[in-house]
Image 1 (tube, rainbow, N blue to C red):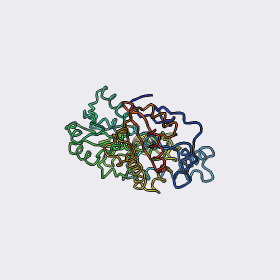
Image 2 (image 1 turned 45 degrees about the horizontal axis):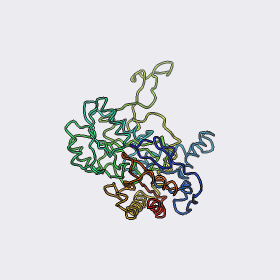
Image 3 (image 1 turned 90 degrees about the vertical axis):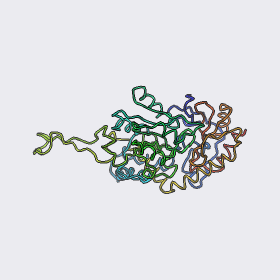
Image 4 (image 1 turned 45 degrees about the vertical axis):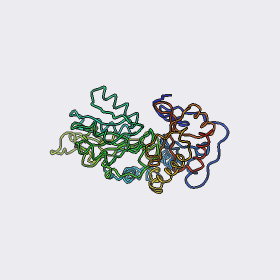
Length: 413
């Protein structure tokens, strides 16, 4: 187990995470009420780790099944209608969720892939600009940025003080050569919400652009990228968007496409404008007709996991039907109850503003013993951290106060 990454108890599919064996007796049947019954995994355990990845919902499973049937049997019998509708609507559905335009959304296979497109293609970085971030950014992104720093990129990482970072310290790290400020809008470490609007103004005043990792924000907290001043953003869908791995979205502000953020790839198909490929070559065109795309799909690598996007589309419909505000209110109410219930002397909260987001983290004195108690109680949270002394709890719409009660009981034992 890597002690510098959160470890999810019970998510064996997550790369870099150790899973605990939760097989055996003691599982309780799902409560067939509201949204809880849409997530079969809740019949086996109390799952409070949406920030690590939500259990597959029956609606997402149906989307996967419909694509598999299309792939297995072909487009006949109306099977292609569903897939074509997904392909035409999924970008717009995500755009609506974050306050963007469909033309500002591209498809990428994960959050870091979207961030890497920005790092590779930002003209100001190519001209010697620097990157400013902080250590509440996603650890995988920090590792990548440190690697790029070793290769020569000027990367400035502002360390947190007691798991928080002030705007003043971020501003102090910027200068006239700062090209990009890259942060997580909601930290996976403890649910800290970056003051994005203020940070964006600070960066823009210095001529820098802003990238936000929104994997812990999209679908979890109400957000509007335009109001927040975010220029680029990316996220995977397997967490608060109720999708699966290998699927994600990239947001690029419309006026930056092809200008400040140049093309790295050139998706599309060249038309051969000469015999014998065409009977009458167009004298105005070159031998290979090149027509670059004029929206954020210009950053896509080509074909993507349409199977995975069927699940993502169903997840987005689930979110839109319930409303992000409602989902957020439900989760943060459970977070606040947990904070109130736990003994703050035994479990020090390290989230600066607990209840602002659906993620909250605590320090624990004996993490190994906590792991054993959670396993015995069949309660899934994330356990770990840089000093191997933290737990992170992230309830979603399928959780209720009884789940929080089971967690509190297990921790008090």
